[in-house]
Image (cartoon, rainbow, N blue to C red; front, side):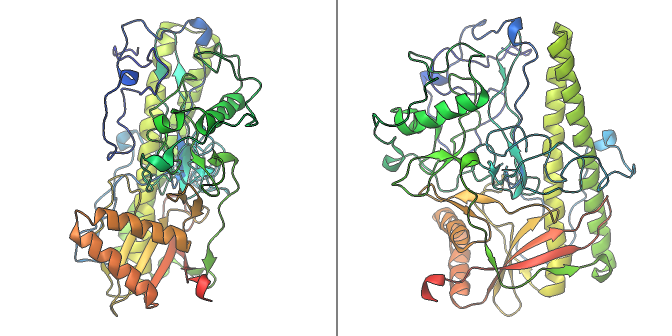
Length: 521
């Protein structure tokens, strides 16, 4: 139970949820079950021996997923149009301090943490913290396109700049503090995991049959709780048991996962008090494995080298918009970094000298960081899209018109931008706020993980658009037009990244993916 009286832990072994956040998949039907019913006051309370346990923070900022569209997408929006003013951190955001590219230690797009799929913020959202450093201060992050579960994205899937992790903090007198869910700075909404990606509950999602030679972990306990007493297992051992259970324990996969290995919700925790890792597999004939332990998906092919553009080629109107977006992103990163340090300090104080006051302070700082982290993600996302809309598209595709998209507000299962060229062809854009931000990844319906920029990834997004087209004729029509343009070689699929900067727009890097059908070559 938290300081507001909300029960955070449940008595049974079924999926448990945090009352502070809704499921990550808004389309997932809600089916009440005993596993999700609150318990009597006092249940799930932990003693002082858990005081100061570290909070597991969410996913990669990279492609973790976009939370909503930060740039207008209504019909008739033309390249170069204005975007609404962005406010990062309000009056509390430090500004003009010369940080930015010179901030100590961290990658710009990745916040403190770990992999996007299941460990401290390293998505994805989907994923997964991208490799390489960015221009903002921070703690080392891992790759990730999608939130928990992937390499840099859920874990890996670099793409959205920050990974997220499952699990929670147990405080004396309280239940588990919900994990901070995030995903890449640029693609938070599309966290390859937990954001849809075609997953659904169905026959193909069933747990593989138990095999006597399945390699049951020797440290796995018998009985109702396979994890044994609290503190008896390492993080890696808990992780291995969760993967084993997903493959061999009847009902475990169905309780926590969609059919493609994406998690149903980051809020679902098992007896360990942690969210199981995102899964992937090579094919339906292979066992499920954790995204963070799986090889990175094959990289995309490109048609040519990167095209660079400086701020000197942007119009004065575009520069004003881009400078504003760059400044807001920078300030949000600075504030997020400071909030992360405040949280870490509060955790340490409570760990070494726990009191009710230090406990409350730790909780407050944790939620301050959670808010700052989301704010940073949103502004990084908005900046990357602004670079594409106000500089790249007007410069390389003059008079192109932006097409409206009907994807989820969190940005998953959709392209960042789609533009209709003056000649009738199309430009599909994946936008990143920084040149060091890696591409995201997603699970196909089979569970196979593919990288952003590949033909498989592109066609899987088209598949999602067709599904939405069942209720939105415009989305169905656009999906069909994109397929036709691809077949007629009238479609450019590009990635746009902003150059490193400390709060002032510094230009872009653009590259075109090669998504030709190689089976016919």
